[in-house]
Image 1 (cartoon, helix red, strand yellow):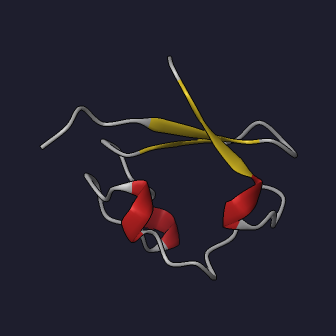
Image 2: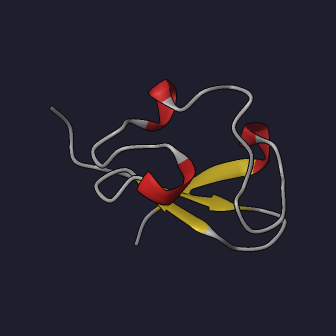
Length: 57
């Protein structure tokens, strides 16, 4: 398994961390970005998955 990555919303700056997931929004911890559903949206601003970019933290 590769190291967990983080993805940032380019609209509002909310960060999705693969290690933490987003359990309160239906994404369990250790869920790779590729497995996050395409219809998932940013919990802060509603941006689409394609509005996120991988970041090094």
